[in-house]
Amino acid sequence: MVSFLQIDSLTKRFGDLVLYENISFGIAQGEKIGLIARNGAGKTTLLNIISGKESAEKGDVVFRNNLRTGYLEQSPVYPEGLTVLQACFYSQSEIVRLIADYETALLVNDTKALEALIPRMEQEKAWDYERKAKQILSQLKIKDFDQKVETLSGGQLKRVALANVLILEPDLILLDEPTNHLDLDMIEWLEGYLKRSTISLLMVTHDRYFLDEVCNGIIEIDNKQIYSYKGNYSYYLTKRAERMEAAQAAIDNANNLLRKELEWMRRQPQARATKAKYRIDAFYELEKKAGQRQEEGNVNLNVKASYIGSKIFEAEHVSKSFGDIRILNDFNYTFSRYEKLGITGDNGTGKSTFIKMLMGEIPPDSGRFIIGETVRFGYYSQEGLLFDEKMKVIDVVQNIAEYITLGNGKSLSVSQFLNYFLFTPEKQHSFVHKLSGGEKRRLYLCSILMSNPNFLVLDEPTNDLDIVTLNVLEEYLANFKGCVIVISHDRYFMDKVIDHLFVFHGHADIRDFPGNYTQYRLWKTQQQSAVPDGKQRGRSSEASGVTGGKPAYRQPSDKKKLSYKEQKELETLEKEITLLENEKKAIEESLNSGTLPLEELNRQSTRIGELMDEMDEKTMRWLELSE
Image (cartoon, rainbow, N blue to C red; front, side, top):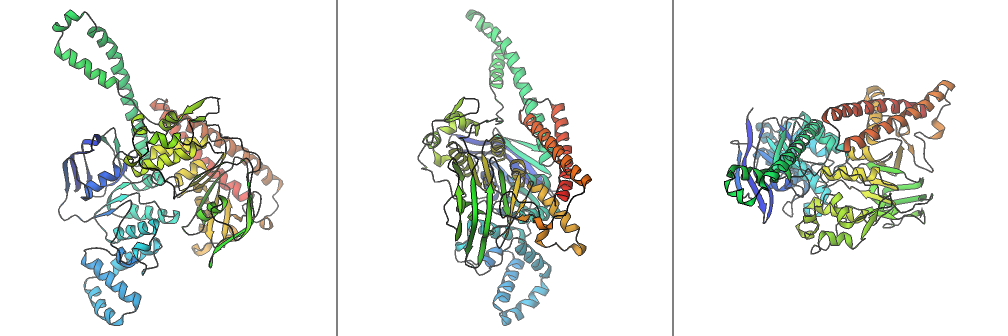
């Protein structure tokens, strides 16, 4: 394989904080590598070093000669005054600049410029390039080419920057959270595009389905060192479990040897001078080895939410528009106790507006939300993070509450709660301004949860959180004794957390699907493939419009009467699906315990895959009958 990038003996520190020390790895042609680490471990810093935006303490970054590279930053910046079109084609490449000039002339219908540019496009064979560029812009829903970049939202700018990187067709691209601010259709398109492409890449993302589908290698930063795995995310999980088990065995072995060495070291002081120096040195090495800890962040937080009554909230004839854009139209819904609702849909269809109306931040044009008296909201918004940067981490949370109550009558202090969410005692006493962007997001999440709400409203909670933190949050929500509404583009997170979906189609068309996101996509794909010529059915074949109570999957008028045999099958399926869900939950708890031997871990991992397939099959049949 041709080497595209080689990192040798790289060290990076900020003051006393060492991010990594003497790390080495390489990326070859065709490799698609996912970079995984906890927030604050230096993922973005490593990409910045590779791209030349930051310097390292020591070490070498070597690219193959004439290698074309691209870098999608987490927060991209373009010079003010550029239009969206100019930013999309922002490059030193002559062909890219030629296409940009052609698109600009086409946009303003400059016939004279077009007459001069078309022969050049022919000469440079740029038409295929231009067609691919237009496909990328179309899939990322970039349409307003005249808009200035300084007027774009963070999400719009990220899409423009992603288009810019992909249009350049580099040999190697660095991607920092490419799925942030993309809707699910865009994520799935990008997933397919990168899978089919011959581009090599190094990518930081929290999207585990994306990692699993796109990557053929994983690099993990752990305890200032690099660990490489040749496989996708699922393979990484298996091999990492083996590594952690081996490391724990080495620590246990060191502890046993340490006890014996300790007896030897404690013999009469007068005999110390005669002891072999190598034996003394070996003792201190063993002591260091035995003192290592495997901090996995496995959590079983059975937090006792404050009491919530049977009345949660009701939406009565709610309508909302912004000019010609309709968000809700005569919307009615009664939210149930302990309901866990996911909200999905394209950007701009009104998902966040719906949440803000529920929270009282935006008034509806007509109708109302009636909130139960016992409801205590915990609202994680995209616009959060309003911290005093000069405060210490522990003080931020301690100002909200001194402790949090657990379901067994016990309580956790602020420090213990922060530790569960992966803030070490050292981090807890650091100042907020020293935290990374992801660590600030994690602190914001802790500040919401520490207020002990009984109804969590989470608007894109997974953006900028690392995978370990997401595992902790998923475990927290699984044990949460309250209500949850989640807006997220993270398919893996949604599948683990929610029990049904609101799908926002735009133009006030909201449908309720009785299942998780993967089940919804599977159902939607089957519906599309069942239609002749690949044309999608009208939306009447999708989930029912939400009008009140717990809506059926179709409109009631669309239903036909089931036969006695079908009715019995439907009842049996409901029981079987419940049993499968319970078995799946029990296996997930067992897998998260961190106590399983390797053989049992592999067996249960295989079984959970079988369960998912069986649940999908039975759920699809249940949907057919329930329609």
